[in-house]
Amino acid sequence: DLEVNYVDYSDASGELIEVGDSAGISANTGSVFFDRSVYPVPFDPSDYDTQKVDETLADADSSITGNTVLHIRVNDPDYDISGSGSDILPADTLMVQIHRGSQTSGNLATGTADIKETSPTSGIFELDLSLGDTFDCVTDSCTFTESAIKDGTVKIEQGDIVTVQYTDKTDASGNENTVTDSATFDL
View 1 (cartoon, rainbow, N blue to C red):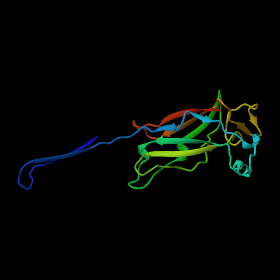
View 2 (cartoon, rainbow, N blue to C red; view 1 turned 180 degrees about the vertical axis):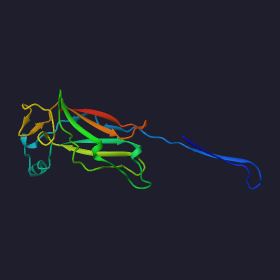
View 3 (spheres, one colour; view 1 turned 60 degrees about the horizontal axis):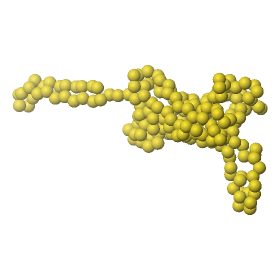
View 4 (cartoon, helix red, strand yellow; view 1 turned 90 degrees about the vertical axis):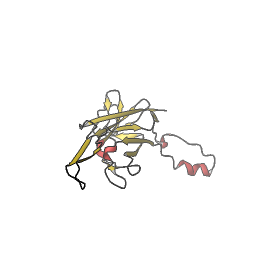
């Protein structure tokens, strides 16, 4: 907190007067969350045959992607800095990885756009990250074994764990802090 006191030894009436005010100064430690603890395993629709009951269903089949969307929410009021309008959170403050035992993917959030605030003055930032059934293990540095890599990619499987890390550059104590959330993939 910041306090200011002003002492006027001789105000307009010649009397001593003291006035003061205070303001609270605070910083926040950011947090990060997935919208669920279990996500469906993404799949490649071409791996499955579909029964075509009629032409309507056949047209609908072409829209199936098999992707899984990870909904990530960061709450950090310290990034709510504009007087009006929504702010942005730099994308490089997030790292999203797939883990299978001791094997780890590269950052799947690399290349995403900066993350927009949900509404002015909320301090809440949301990102929807769409994952296909595989991720690149050639351009992303990953530690998956050669037996898991096929044509430079790794297939996401049941039991894999996805983590999101948010690096708060200045937490409530003024230091850099990393917070994490995780979810699993299941059928």
